[in-house]
Image (tube, rainbow, N blue to C red; front, side, top):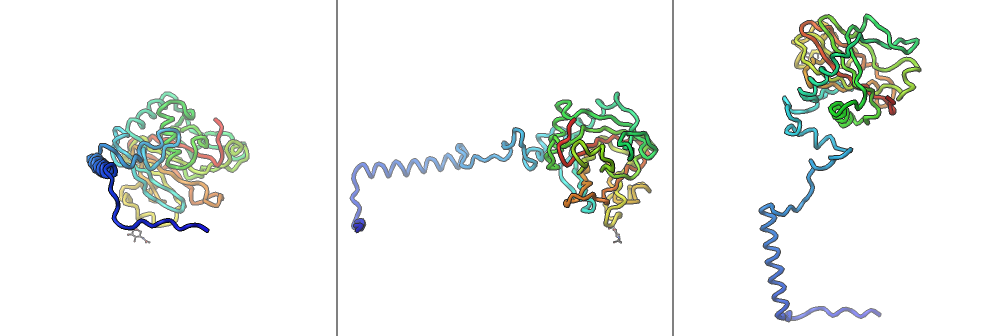
Amino acid sequence: MVKPRRVWSGKPRRSWSWTLLTWLTTWSIFFLLILVALRIISVTNVNVNDKGKGKTSSVLSKPMRNSQIGDQRGERWVEIISWQPRAFLYHNFLTKEECEYLINIAKPKMSKSAVVDEKTGKGVKSRVRTSTGTFLGRGSDKIVRNIEKRIADFTFIPVEHGEGLQILHYEVGQKYDPHFDTFNDRFNIENGGQRIATMLMYISDVEEGGETVFPNAKGNFSSVPWWNELSDCGRKGLSIKPKMGDAVLFWSMKPDATLDLSSLHGSCPVIKGDKWSCVKWMHVYEYHT
Ligand SMILES: *[C@@H]1O[C@H](CO)[C@@H](O)[C@H](O)[C@H]1NC(C)=O
């Protein structure tokens, strides 16, 4: 049988050392509380912004802080444009410096843009796409790597699934007729599988025209706040007006992994000024460059 413990009863016998210990403890706690109140000691050492300094930086912490972005013209925030297609507008995704840098390194390398030939899978010149463009190798320099990492952070698609950035230039009258970013041939899906999503970044302002238009989008095209500023072409669908630093993410595949026919999109002819954009195509699997 277990003997029941003796229960303390009556007045505590206070020894001299016991009293001293109580005093010391009480004053120590009091002193600590003062330090905490003066923020000399931090109780919770969790600093969200220090997390993810390495490879796995989180979207919610670092990139949202304007002070770290440098010459940021405005706050970075995401606007839901449409669910059919799934299209989202990232305001102030790139800085002005990044935009200017991309244009400057692309400028000397621009050549006539091509489209993919349905039968051969090879790039061919076409009247539906009249811009000029060039590819920058994936991870080709620090600024490019920075941008590519930001794209991965905001799309939740790893850097390794992306093609190199493509820089595009449209002068007055130049356009890209509505098309899908997905492939119809076997040749082009050998590397990385189908294209799943596209990040389309505007690296210049366009005075007039040059909108990104989604003619198959479901919904009220005229409900966008910038409706009155759109060209005739822009009014033929759900449109986004290019603004330097903004980016559009849209998905070519639905969550059930079938192709999304509402992702049909085009670049309206530039009417005034010129348009520079930067495209990141992302694949279902890792894309080897
Ligand atoms: C579309 O949106 C515009 C602007 O919000 C509105 O005036 C118009 O009535 C809407 N059209 C339809 C068919 O709902």
